[in-house]
Amino acid sequence: MSLVICSNSIADGTAERQNQSIYKAWSFRNQLTSTYKIPANAQVDLQSVKVNVDGRIVLSRQNNVFYQYFGKKLNLDGATAPQIEDTPYHPLRVALLRRTEVDTSVKEFTLSDFANRVGERMSDSIYHPNLQDKTKVEILRNASGLDFLGYKITQDQYLSASNVNGSLVNAEEQIDADKPRNGSGSWTYTSGTKVFQRNASLEEIFTASAIFPDNPLSLSDGTMIVNISGNGADANASGSAVPWAVGLSRYFNNGNMDGFYAPYYNDDSYDADLELGESGYMDFGVARNDDGDLVAFHTAFDSAAQKTRRYEINYWENASSSFTALSDRLELSNGKYEKVRFTAKGETLKADIYNASTSKWETITEYSGAATAANKDSQFNPIHQACWCLHPVLEVGSAGGTNNKKLHIAHIKTPPILDYDVKKKNKSGWWETMDLLGTQRWCRAVESRAILDTSNTNALYTQVGVDSGASNRITGLNNVLILEPSEIYTPSRGANARQSLGFNSGVIDTPDSLNPTEFHSNFAPSLVSSQAMFVRLDNFNQRVVNALTGNKSQIIGHLPRFDSTQSTGRLYFEPNNFVWIDLDNPSEISVSDFNISFCYSNEQYATILTGQSIVVLYFRSKPKELM
Image 1 (tube, rainbow, N blue to C red):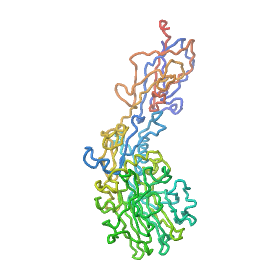
Image 2 (cartoon, one colour):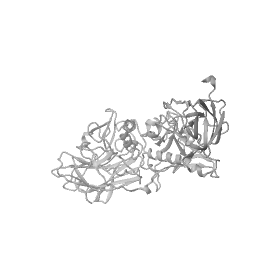
Image 3 (cartoon, one colour):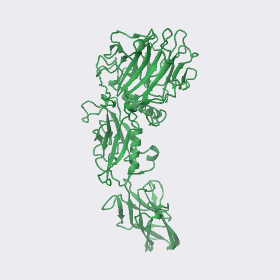
Image 4 (cartoon, rainbow, N blue to C red):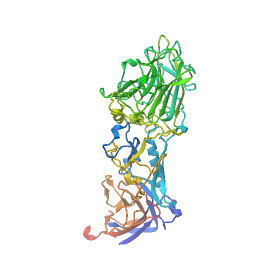
């Protein structure tokens, strides 16, 4: 019997040879100055191992999923309102490992890399335009700055002071999914002047309709203003006015089965007396209809049809409207109204129209208090999760041979989101990502709730706005972390990240600090790998099969996740019993080097190791009685 000691380094301290690839702590080669003779029919045994497990977080499918929620905080008793069905919100899945990472491997992160990954994935998965890019995760340490205590998760908002003018460079078709998206044959848009014009050659029965996908409306005092006459617009000009519509909509990457840009669960019918003719999808809108009247509308759920559809807003019945003296719609006949404005604050949306003769904005409709049976149809629904990211929609029709009228976008105030892109998953709104993933059903689940059914006067909802200060922070909506499956915050299936983030509870709904929201870990997450490690002798021909991978393996020993004293730092392992493995060498072997590596059960390198690794091997001739 003979003993062989293998190591990647002379000591645990930094050494020049550690920087060379052949001396990594998890994979190294020892070259011999003279050949080492191993007898025929030999066996090998792992006598002992010494390694250093560094301060890394190891992720796999067992500990990388959680959910975040931004909405009204739910009552955890499961009975008292609000429960999930009393809100227009839905938990948002956060997967720390990407699909290509979780299927075949584990991933190891330094503490700072793990913090960056959590912050990145939470920012990508929050979807609200005023929260995107605003999640930051930092390492918590003690007063000395040495001991790791966990993480601080900060979720902030883009406030009104951050609002910028949207770029409004691109315009795309909003009605017919079979038409060119650039509007060819229907309309033109000049990005330099921001003028949208109906093509004169378009048949009179058709409406020119476009959405502007570059930037979403800020929900922290964000405004959109569209000129309907004057300043490059003439759709509402006196004597030659045509039907027009100005609205806000989520973006559609795909048409529905009827060939329209709308949810698969949307019915393109609407209240008949709206008299809108052909019209593209809008979540909220204001229009001059075919009769020349001012109408307002939103898209809401129709429980009878089990679909969403367009409902008229009886704005003259709204307590805050400038038109309460009317008993019906305002007639837009004299051209004195020149602009339409939408203002979003939290969940609330207000629509105004500018009276050039008085130089004043007049309120069409706004949120005027908690919904009641009497006012539910006179104010817009809350800006719910499926339409968090709202984009301008412009429409121009024709009348009396007038076919080429124009609208002009004065501006839209938007948060300065980095890399916003409605055509990429996790880069814009919740709807847009669900649409790309083919999981619109989750959006339908939200939109079908009774509180969003305009005709259901029993299910009422109190909308949330912004604070009364200069910041216009969205208040009344809470950041919540769901780290384990919850019967309250549903769906939250597969949540398993409580331990890896260091929290005592599966639902974290009370932050350590507000404005911005901060969550602090309750304990330092374990830095020991949840994956057991194995030792490989890579340049011999031992008889080993890894049944998990279904292949021959070079593994000679199994290491537990910790020794008898600790789970990180210097660990020492010595098996209690010898396990002799045949090398299958019928003749003597002359060995010039030993190749050692450490891996997980899937044969992936265990790069969680650092510093000095030592492996001690026994070699012997196979006993004759076993031959």
